[in-house]
Amino acid sequence: MKKNEQDMSFLDHLEILRWHLIRSGIAILILSILAFIFKEIIFDAILLAPKDPNFLTYRFLCNISQGLGLGDALCIKESPFSLMNINMAGQFSAHLMTSIYAGFILAFPYVFWEIWRFILPALKEKETKVTRGVVFFSSLLFLTGVTFGYYVIAPLSINFLGSYQVSQTVANQISLTSFVSTVTTISLANGIIFELPILVYFLTKIGLLTPEFMRTYRRHAMVITLILSAIITPPDITSQILVSFPLIILYEISIQISKAIVKKNNL
Image 1 (tube, rainbow, N blue to C red):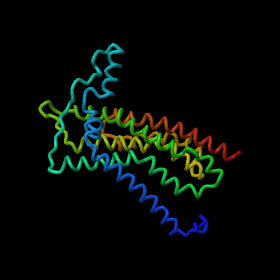
Image 2: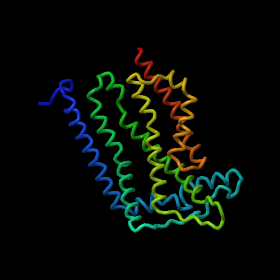
Image 3: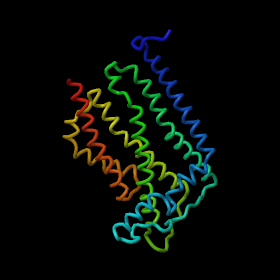
């Protein structure tokens, strides 16, 4: 017979959490193995695509440049660097780590669903109704962030850093590990950052955050946003601005979410 939630001990809750985490881990493992098997798709079609001058983002920038009458000013005709592997296990390590990243990204909706299943019994019936769709919206925000990082931040960072030279006598030969780390870290970090509205929702729900607090410390939040952007992006101002811009928008949206929750709680 299943125990009532109120009668369960701390260890019982830990046991339930453990199985949620185990199932999440199995999902990530299975999808990581699939990503490992289909390395041509993961590397050639996805991960290494931003190095190709025909990448969607570069074609878009080129069309904008020509549409504004700037000619080929924003067009990227060739890759500014070459990739190389200098470690014996470099390519295998990159393959393995990329597969794990891909597994986590693909499994995120299921992982969040498992975590949500653990949290759900602790909510009241009224709170359960209000939080319907949280798994869908959380997954949507995460995948939107990953897409934004992959198509906007990563390509611009790669080309800025890959073409930057302190002297014409120094050629850029980027290691595969460095390239893979840049693309995957930026994409995943943006996915996590786009979860801000969900975080604000729950913090407001439990009374730790109010819209007044967020408005009062808006300027402080902007500074923190810039610092956070500098941490998760390569050290170029373009990437930091591009990450800061959606963060600021998400912050303003989060204020409205917090306001709506407080208003509903006061009814």
